[in-house]
Image (cartoon, rainbow over all chains, first blue to last red; front, side, top):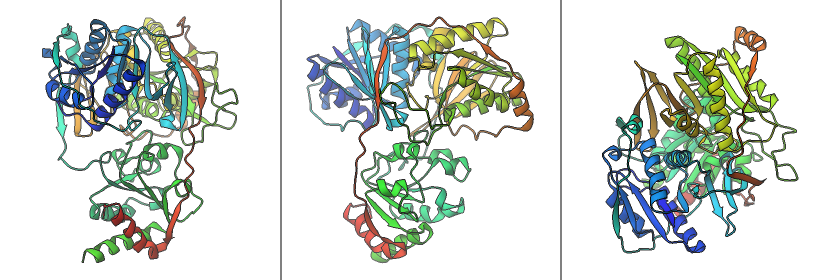
Length: 318
Length: 254
């Protein structure tokens, strides 16, 4: 049996979770394995509905007092017990920070290998996975009684394929000790567009020149309902907070369009921006990596080009 | 506080990574090396905690003899002691790496006090396995949370904050604990002159490990096929604004 661990936040399944459901269903179909969903903690019923909508059922709802909120040890222990009790030979989740964390916890407990951020699994179980955020790939094999993998976020498009949702309850035995890593408190940001979900990202690099230089990027992002991002040089210079960084060690973005201003396009930035549907580079150097790899480019100084774009938008809106 | 920081020697981020003709390794002939960016921040965090609450920090790596360079760099930033589990040069799989670190923690704790805190980077920049810290913590019976961008030391516990898309999660974990930190938790310092002198003098302790290979076997490395796309030049300078806004309207974002 192939068990998909459903990524969810108290019932709400993000796109990343739907990608894993889609990839798990496809892989189970190809391997001729039955498929099931493991949904852990508060909101499990609601998340099981989302699993069914993506063709993964029955749903095993893991409930326990110590699963009331997220905790890597409690979730990892639950996955390990479910995999063994339910007889899974493959366990699949998604390569987000939490997905990788709980799968690593489960793999450690079962002393099994764990392969993170896979792009595809061949019929002979040769697995292709990402290194360096995806700028290098690795083919790997695993010797394991239970094969544990996460699919890289954005590697698969979520596809719905409804099955009737049958659920049953799974109660893991959890030692009180796992409560030590439960979430104790949450800081909730005002709801709104984030860098990783924005449909427009206006990014700035070394070419912006100063913290103040970002005001023209802020203005354009504001007009388009988007967010401002930046390269690693910018955060290392202290011009912008690290939470704005797009790249391997920052945020991976996937907007309709990424407007990359004064960014040379070093590989660690590119892997954070590669899932963008379209890239428009604004750069004085027409040979810059970002320009040659982009779909569209404007050659020129961002301090002239970006205000002109904002003015044109305002002019057309009257 | 006694703090252990685990780092990995990797090709310096930003460089184009090429593969040897047999696909078994990264071609390192023209590459500089560094520690993974998240780990550089872990070293900085350890040094800052020691500055705030007292104690000492130790840096450890599993890697080739050349990884001494990264260990000494950590010492130049303020870490006191360095230890190396020497490999034959090949990258060990995650299970073997974790087992080697567990051996090293045992050896280092035997000769001193137990570590109150063991810090890892969220994931290594090169292989990105997302698991070595978790495996080490489990083997040591200690709590572990990854993805941390803020650490506050309390009485017998540590408060650790992890940003999420919706805001942040706050954990209060009893010591001794293991945490994986992310770039952005701090801005790493540059070595001082005194630090450089210390890094030259420090003796790198060699730790033996009998760790055996785990279940994941690398077959080959390769570069992804690059999508060759013709870049459409929309214009030059401010005159390109109309063409850009046409595009933004066409895709429905303006």
